Image 1: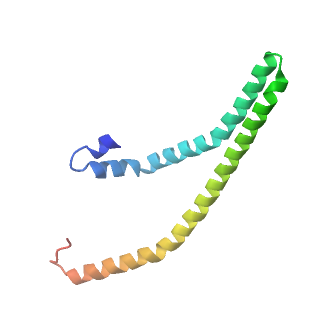
Image 2: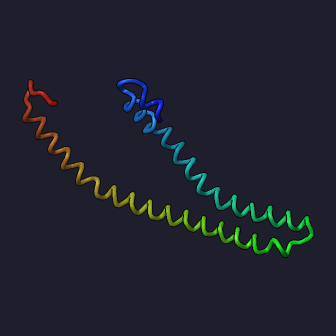
Length: 124
């Protein structure tokens, strides 16, 4: 981002066009979703690795508290992810619901402003 922003007089516009490109937006969203869905899986698999390591050492009963804590952590992470997704969907729907009236007011002001400028008016 810093390199794109400092790419001369139009650096901000270049960075904006890059990061708002539909392909980049899609890849960014897929990466974030993949991360949030893989984190609970990673914690759960770590608990399995701990259990196997302790079982091979001959003391699987010592691993049970650690496995239990890690399994609970995986469920908590999964629950946080689901709650975060739910809040985002509700907030996004609410923002889209309120966006249409605001945009129509802005467009009506812009249209009336354009009509008052006439043919040679400056729009600065």
